[in-house]
Amino acid sequence: MKTSKTAKVTLVGAGPGAKDLITLRGLKAIQSADVILYDALVSDELLSEIDDAIIKIYVGKRCGLHSFTQQEINVLIVENAFKYGHVVRLKGGDPLVFGRANEEIGYVESFGIIVEVVPGISSVIAVPGSQGIPMTQRGVSSSFWVMTATKKEGSFSEDLKFAAQSETTMVILMGIRKFKEIITEVSRYRSALTPFAIIQNGTMKNEAFAVGCIGDISGVIKNMDVSEPGIIVIGDVVSEHPSFFEEEVQRVLYSSL
Ligand SMILES: C[S@@+](CC[C@H](N)C(=O)[O-])C[C@H]1O[C@@H](n2cnc3c(N)ncnc32)[C@H](O)[C@@H]1O
Image 1 (tube, rainbow, N blue to C red):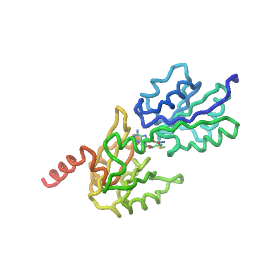
Image 2 (tube, helix red, strand yellow):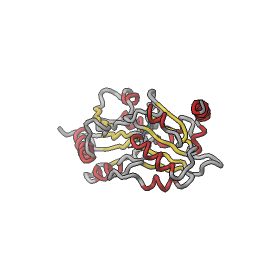
Image 3 (cartoon, rainbow, N blue to C red):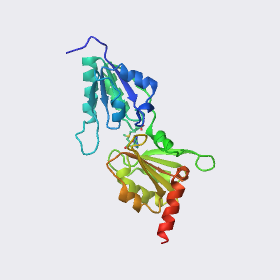
Image 4 (spheres, rainbow, N blue to C red):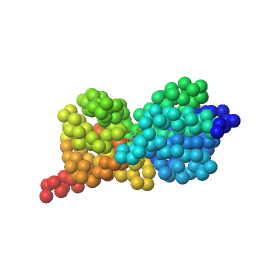
């Protein structure tokens, strides 16, 4: 079957998770879609708002579950656009931040299909921000560096080492499973009292967070569910988190007993 509608693809950033953190333009694109291809990071909260008449296809790549290759996703986007018309490719956060959006755009455009991009609120800033952790702070941190812990070929990111040697706020995505290694590396350059935060499922009902200092991560490691996506923030700005001071006092009190 082929539709009489013109094939069109819109890449939409779904925002960090909470359903009301998608942009108005993103919401309008979703409402006008014939098919939505969505990732693991798109929340159930947001999906439940979408009209049942719109075809929804999960193409996520969560660890341990069946996952589509990037090439399979590219093909699905094009096939559905020719078959049904308007395809929305819905991605967590902003589509252009660690989202492989450019690969999808290039492939889709090679078929002569028009692609529009609707930016989203990236988890990079929104997830720490919604916990009260700023990226920059006058007199504390004048920059922030967003990085992944692991590169394409699985090696540890060199950028992480460079960032650790500066005073920048480090924002690390896709690093939960490597948390210990990350902290070991950062500890080579920064003081044991440097604060960190881990926020998982940020802005959603099942949000979890932990704060501490890089010199003592044992408690955090013991309680962390590494299967959930999360962001690690390292830097003095984390001391702005409302519970940071309290957590530190408790730790010092218990360790001196
Ligand atoms: C492939 S990257 C995509 C980032 C996305 N494009 C963005 O702008 O937020 C996926 C990683 O983003 C982070 N992430 C995305 N949403 C998150 C959330 N709600 N809470 C915590 N971390 C999140 C996690 O580190 C996750 O492994």
